[in-house]
Picture 1: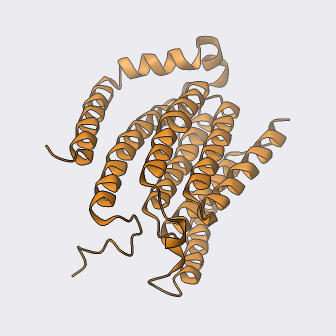
Picture 2: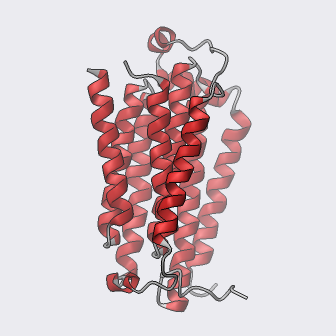
Length: 169
Length: 100
């Protein structure tokens, strides 16, 4: 059962990603990216990361993609614009380089490089305490400083976005 | 049985698709979406490694990655809006004022 869900969701996410990069209309591209993000959220649930799955749907598929769609519709883009190619013959080398990158990544995966020490958070322990509670505990104890710095980062990003998008200061 | 390698290969495929998208597309917004796709591909390998190593750190890092992605999307889209206001285009071939 788990294997079937994995294969279905992996196929959906890869297909939607392919459509994302070859779709002419940016609005459709954004919708395909939302499909990819939702299927990745399903994979997170398979990996017993319920909190991350919920955040993925709320923050990524909800907030960030709404921002993207908003900007796309605000700018009223000309779809025909992309048809003229300033650098001809770029697509074939780009695809070739992508395949090369994928082979290098697979060679790294095949080596015994990907190993690590087993941690203490086993599935049974996480299920008994609760995934969200454990993440909250860690965020407010061991990772308190990064968590607070994150708030400053978001604050700076909000100010920066307003500064950049404002017509006149 | 789904192993860690399955998830890492899926992550590699999505990352490669994101890189190809950045290389072949000319629309700045779609290039931006491909960058988001690459961030997500890395997040998959974080969560998968965390699950198979019985660890929690991977999920925390994904949490921070998402925050950085949200900040980056806000600032990046603001830059795109500012560029569009000046040049009336988001085609990156026409945005070459920094070319020497």
